[in-house]
Image (cartoon, rainbow, N blue to C red; front, side, top):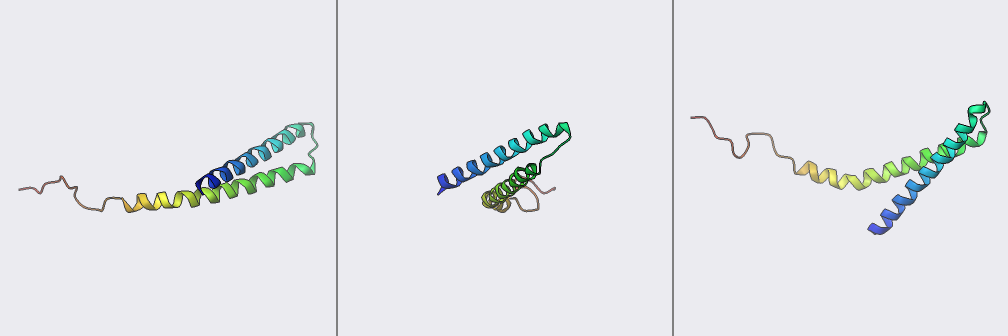
Length: 85
């Protein structure tokens, strides 16, 4: 299952990079003053892909963040602290 998740994450990231690259090429071509309506398509696809990657990344990091939150030390004196007197 982990291999499936890793390959899915790599494919989504690759799709985002390709969509951004296509968008960047078209935007660079727009320096002449004319922007094609087709520029919008890869821009929104790349935004959607990045949203999916962000969603999956938060799902993968949630158990780690929860584990770290449970391991926080409680408020109070440290174990090596001594009382005065």
